[in-house]
Image (cartoon, rainbow, N blue to C red):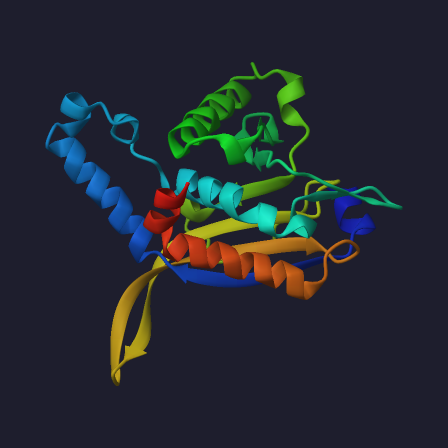
Length: 223
């Protein structure tokens, strides 16, 4: 952690997105499950309703390959780019922070990503995780939203070039036809290594991620 802060030129960009679509997505699944459609139709999505964290992980896995600078390792004199997405998931454990890795997340369904995230987190918390599963991530996601955090400065997990922080959902106002209309917003904090990534590419990744999250149900239909 100390070397990450002292050796890197870290900068954090903060933004938020309209969480209406992802909230609606989860509510529709809950309603379908309440009607027993998980039993009659056997939809895997209904067996375990995706969490907000699952949704973020899935959206990152489908977005980041379009922004190669953010799915890379900075190795001092060179940058290594990846054509697959290996998601590091920050997990709070009794032994401190651990970052197990969901490998090849870009080829997994949201149900598979969610199940793998739970399995890895439980293994890390119980001290039973294979050390091989704690390395190789191409970008890490740290979610403090459930703790009510509105914004923070994530610290990059070297040699990655970026780390995405996920914040809480809060009610905000926007003007529509001269009236203040409330909506639910979720904050995102992206820290990037300025030695490897310029501000504009990092901002474009956030912009692309926001677009996919605000239109998440369309993203699910395309993949």
